[in-house]
Length: 156
Image (tube, rainbow, N blue to C red; front, side, top):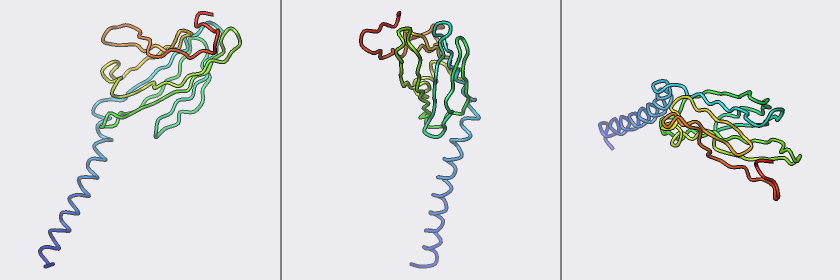
């Protein structure tokens, strides 16, 4: 291979590296352009019930938290450019029968939630399920139901 061909091959490699680097930086910049997302999870179980929760994404572990009645846990982040940002939470609370109720749910999914809540996503955890506020309809929507042990009802 001649000198000119080697220079062209090196130039192509350099351009490829620059394109890859630019795309990686664009993912960081896109969050700044479109704003920080804030997620609130409110314990709307009955009075005296504590909500235990542990939220995480593929990149971040937000730790374990115990949320009192009518209190909330919040966090914020920037979406990635590919709209694949996903946070899921493990929830646990005590049913009035004494049984432990558990569930794991996707609490922030960029593809689902950007059109629904934009940059402020609010969730209510209730004994009947987990509800998300839809800014378009201005209504709370139940997105998840609890899987309860046999014989238990969400109203008891």
